[in-house]
Figure (tube, rainbow, N blue to C red):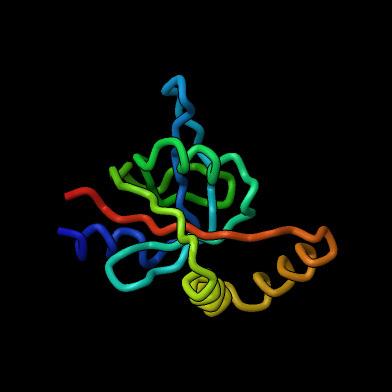
Length: 127
């Protein structure tokens, strides 16, 4: 079943990740992603709201979308796991850079100028 779900996302550039506040309200955010085995991985700023919400509640929903978050497929239930290990974060960074190329590298330069700190999380499908 996971491979069928993965196929849904392969041709897309963005996924909409819906994370949940402590009061249960969902927050939808379009993000870049890459595939790592039978999971999806996302790199984002460590202090972002989605990272804070995932720390409190690992349940997420994801759907393929465009850059503005407009859905291009159905929602899929999943669990997000923050990756604490620097080796894993470096691997995610490489995977995302391979997928998005020059555009990703330009965002990296802007991040260095802003002195941003990055982390990543893994999305596992719920069977």
